[in-house]
Length: 413
Image 1 (cartoon, one colour):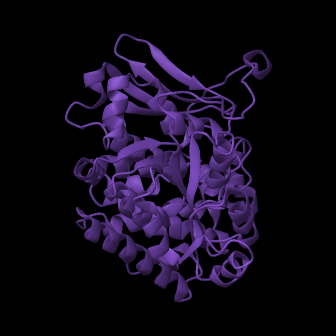
Image 2 (cartoon, rainbow, N blue to C red):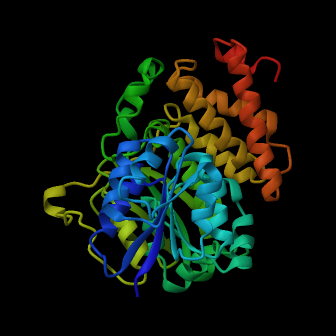
Image 3 (cartoon, rainbow, N blue to C red):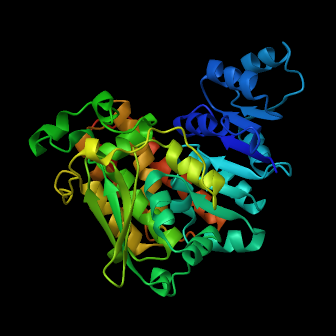
């Protein structure tokens, strides 16, 4: 049976990787819907190649894409903005939704797909960070299935016994017993260390946005690349692992693995450690999730362990990468803290890219936001959305008011 797929964020790195896998299997998958916020030419090329039934684009793209569709693609329905994205995510015709919109911008459409009972392949960790324990309730109400496709959590998913995988797909493993009920002691998340693994501490303050976005192993979008450089990406993954796998932060270890061959590991009570290895390419977890419980070719070169040579592991340097410890504390605090963490980080990264913050200001900026907002309540979709908006607007207003230093930005908190 051919399954209809909707890709949210089709012109991003996740979307393009997913399309490369899907086009190999026309007898298994059909592209029903695509969404795009930027890259008009790429979007039009995808429409021409995959002939989706429905496309949603940003207001800035609507004119150009609409003009393109009138030239031989009149059968493609064109929708606009967030409402259009949500419509595609929840469409009755769609079987699988690939949630690849970066940041909290992907929150509403991911929730729409979950509420509509879809099989949701989640690449953007921010919605899971924001939803927390509410994810399990939403999935239970709708019958949706959740499969992570970011490389680390998909690796963990692959290393779990089948019963634990089923629990995970049902909205996350219950935190009452968590992974212990499946004989699992803990999780080991691997991190490449990013572009500044070997940069001296005293040189970190002069890092530019272009340097931070140049990841040594992975081809990713700008925001997630900078998150990898600060190691906030790994911190958000700690929160995500808590949500999906019912494990406490104390049972999640982070190790630096510069080769990015071992994508994560699961430690069992008997002393065994099961790891997932592959070349660093997002097509591997995407193919695994699309075909689950079967296996299909991803198009990625086979891993040659002899050519890979040594696999190295080391502890992260908390002095160079304080975002990791800040995120772990937010995961331990729970409640509003992960929502504040995520919102403040997105504002901080944007400010860094705009030259308003130094690279080394990012963790202090986030910590100030946590100190200000983490005692607020956010336990349903409305309050989560409002808190996210409050944090963003408050921080952005400080920046827009002309603050030129971290001290000025946080003054009056």
